[in-house]
Length: 83
Image (cartoon, rainbow, N blue to C red; front, side, top):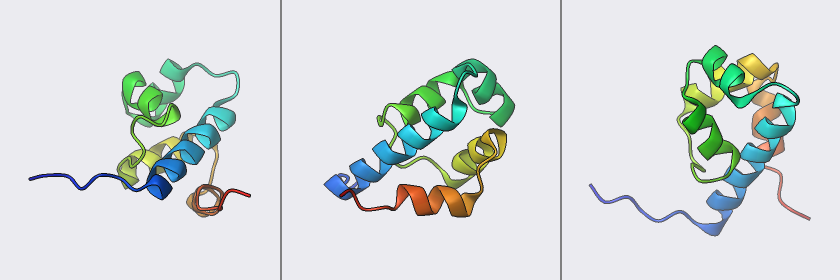
C-alpha cells in the first residue's frame, strides 16, 4: 500500500503536537515519559521533532495522560491555525 504524501497543513499540525508535548514534558526526561506512556523513547523523539507528524491515536492518548493533558486540550491546541 502506498501512503499518500502529507499536506503542509498535516506537517504543521504534527510540529505543533511535537512542540506541545515537548513543552508539557518540561524537565522530565524523554525516556521517563516514553516508558510511562508505554512507547519507545525513539517514538516520542520522532513525534516531538515532527518526524512522525501523524502518530496513532492511542500513542497520543497515552502521552497526553502521562503529561496531564486532556485529549480535548491537545486537539484544540494542535488544530490552532498559525497566525
